[in-house]
Length: 290
Length: 142
Image (cartoon, rainbow over all chains, first blue to last red; front, side, top):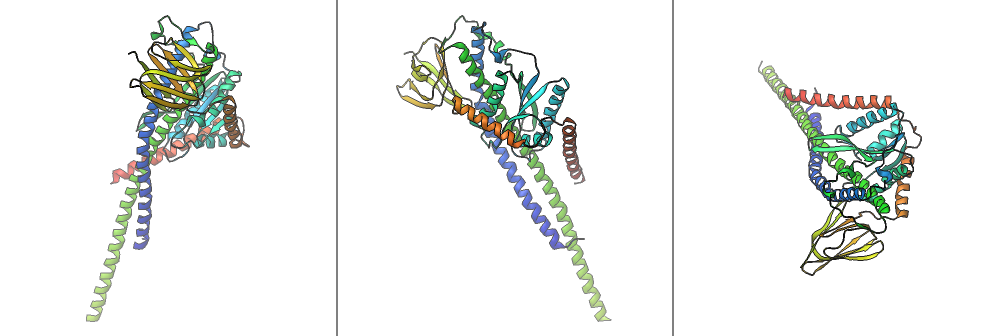
């Protein structure tokens, strides 16, 4: 049995670890709220832009922007949004599993895949396993900014305009609740779905366009897609924090269990030492008496 | 007096929202002033200043690095860009992302090894589940 001192130092180091995991848990919990607020904040912009696109598409039925046209698919673009750091349970593993499943299916149908990766974990993963990666963005920090993302998105949009890819998807974790996150695949291009909501567009009026409608549509669509990817990034960050909070909570609990066990061992060792000492004294006294 | 609702939003959040008498914005073809009941209009914005004159007659200034302006008779929406734009700038960021990718993927194959990926993920998943199970058992003992 290990000595008292050894056990005591073990308990000390587990306690230190527990302090760290519980601090990380609290930090993650406070960051969830901020991330959720960021998610909310990006909504009005996306809603507005979608309305404008709907109107533009409705007002110009003769002009078909390539971003709205369905075409035969030979190659797809996939933007995968992962986390930069680990210690967040099975979040990234689930995401990559979904990515691999989709990619394998496309591969089976003879469709090639171009990847744009957001987050260091995705880069690590595909670095090990290979893939046609055309753009990466890492180290976005606590507050992902549009500035960091547009580069990777532009590569994909250009690739689509040039006809290299025929579809564009984004894959990220969806924030269902603090306890539950799920990988979600969203089709960005062709964006034919967004222009179909025509309910409030019955009114018979059109914008004055400056300079002209087609160029504007280009601008609007690009920004819409950027805002979608941005939203995905922010949402994924909220998921990361939620998963981290849960993972760190269970790590803290586990540390507590280990400490209890070690404490028990320590008490036993201490008891054994005392018993031994007493029996030695009693034995000694008996020997003197005789 | 007629007023007009002005919303300035960016992808990262709402910047301004409120009633106003007049809005001035740096449109691509020159500065425009929007009064209530302006005809519907859509135009890109240059980097510059959006000026909102509110119902109290007070002026609010917002610097935007570009964006879009949507006007409806009682509603003006400025969709502000959060990022600095411009063809050259966009090109540069795209190039940076591409270079980062090339650097990160140096020496790896262009084909994804699906079999290995699936195996690795299954392993990771199994490890994760095993750890969870272990934890449950610890609790029951207690």
